[in-house]
Amino acid sequence: MKILVCLKQVPHQDARLDIAGDGAWIKEDGIKFEINSYDSFALEEALRLKDAGAATEVIVTSIGPDRVTQALRTALGMGADRAVHVKDPAVEGSDALGIARTLAAVAKSVACDAVFLGLMSDDSNASAVGPMIGELLGVPSATGVVKEEKTASGFRVERELEGGALEVVELNTPCVLAVQTGLNQVRYASLKGIMAAKKKPIDVKTAADLGLAGKVGAGAAKVKITKIYAPPKGTGAQILKGSADEVVAGLVGKIKELGLL
Amino acid sequence: MTILVVGEIQKGAVREASYELIAFAKKIGGEVKGLIIGSGCGAQAEAFAKKGAGSVYVADDAALANYSVDAHTRVIKAAVAASGASTVLISNTPSGWDVASRIAAGLDAGFVSDAFNYADGAYVRRVFNGKLDARIVSSAALTVVTVQPGANKAFEGSADAKIEKLAVDLSGLSAKFVETKVAAAKGHDLTKAEIIVSGGRGVGAPEKFNEVIKPLADALGGQMGASRPVVDAGWLPHEYQVGSSGQIVTPKLYMACGISGAIQHLVGMKGANFIIAINKDPDAPIFEVAQLGVVGDLFEIVPKLTAAVKAAKGA
Ligand SMILES: Cc1cc2nc3c(=O)[nH]c(=O)nc-3n(C[C@H](O)[C@H](O)[C@H](O)COP(=O)(O)OP(=O)(O)OC[C@H]3O[C@@H](n4cnc5c(N)ncnc54)[C@H](O)[C@@H]3O)c2cc1C
Ligand SMILES: Nc1ncnc2c1ncn2[C@@H]1O[C@H](COP(=O)(O)O)[C@@H](O)[C@H]1O
Image (cartoon, rainbow over all chains, first blue to last red; front, top):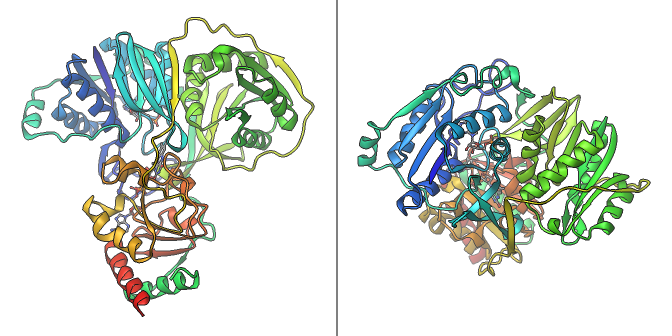
């Protein structure tokens, strides 16, 4: 079984978010990036299946500019076998469907049996791409996966519902699993792994290579962000000002007033 | 212009969020048509129709007794075709987000996720885990939108009910529902706590919970809670998690330390009587739901507060 893992590189969770000149996204230069939190769990899950002998190859892929090479190298260092980097200005400005089309084309080109990816990206928070890939490939998909088990015909997975409830579903392979955070403990790349990763191949592809010229990118996008901005402030909290001691005195005063002290 | 509103049955009834979709549809403007999917769901379809959806398609089949991604994909696609809808609204719930973007991909439609508002021709939604808002415009002939539950007031009104059966071929499904499981009994029940002191990713390391957060909870005679990343990292067990996929709590006092205030966390604690937030980022969304806030380093504030609480109690 070959597993393709989709990795998005997103602004670091503690990065400063300044609005870009066009007002429609954030300024990306000068900030730190990291692998989307959900996607690290997807990669770890695929690597565990390989360690257990259930998967034969783990391929990682990412769509993005030069900087995403770092995310792919990290994944190779953790144990992925090879990488496909879709690097093409013509893919930039894609909406979720454009990204899903591109990833579905990568999945076809590597002939994988399963696509593992994140439930949601930490920047666009869309939870869109996983089910879309499933539909485009004509295969089943499951989101919010917190447990998976390989069966003879595919996977038996547990999906997270609300308030701690779980839904158990069986999917035939090929299939798409969009994972929730926390389903495993993600490993770190070892020094040996990082050294070995230097020899692992990163295949660079364009939209045209994937047969998608004109089908993805800003021109093909059906939805567009027209404006991004800090949420309007409501009344908000009363902010205690002063030295740490003054602030603490204010907090104690409030807790007393609430009758809890 | 027709807006197809996909109702969801939960515990035998059409859930509140489905009526919020009707209210959302009225903001967009257009003819509303509803859809109810289930097995033996005639009464729910009737209720949904009468309480605002008006004309409702019903897909009633034993194979639809439980949620299944490919069965629901087929049914919703059939309802889009039958209704000629140009907009489809689905609640952003675990079954909603599992199917909605599939419909969009299958029908080559625009997709907007987790919108909380529609204004001036644009959908409005949160991005960057609540830190920024975005306006999204669709240029597609068909747009599929998931709507954040709880963000809009449920539609309260009535409509002339009209029920239409929708026949869909449900043979050869590739995803099979097995069962739903309820999480194991909780050892640490936060739902009854009067005071909860929660720590988030900002606490930074597992040992800091026992060193910094728990002493304050103890001093106040309360319980310790946490946000999801803390539990995901294995720093605390799942029963400490507050939020949409954890516990929904309503204490007299909730203190959020190093928690940014993503919607999934807020859902779990915004019902608290009083909320205090300690966060070093003055723009953290948690300050919008808190009544009282401290912009500062929790490692400086919390231990001092613990000492002050102990001193106050001793006095
Ligand atoms: C389907 C689904 C279900 C989910 N369910 C839940 C749920 O049940 N519960 C939940 O919590 N989340 C849930 N989440 C995750 C949620 O989206 C957020 O990712 C999560 O709540 C963020 O946790 P956090 O605030 O601790 O971390 P972050 O968002 O990373 O925030 C950390 C905060 O700490 C502050 N900070 C850092 N250092 C310090 C310091 N020294 N002093 C003071 N402040 C500091 C930072 O300024 C920042 O605001 C769910 C997500 C999905 C998609
Ligand atoms: N540019 C990208 N490159 C690789 N994978 C991506 C990309 N964008 C999204 N994904 C995958 O799709 C998942 C869901 O993202 P989203 O639908 O944007 O919330 C992410 O967790 C990633 O696994």
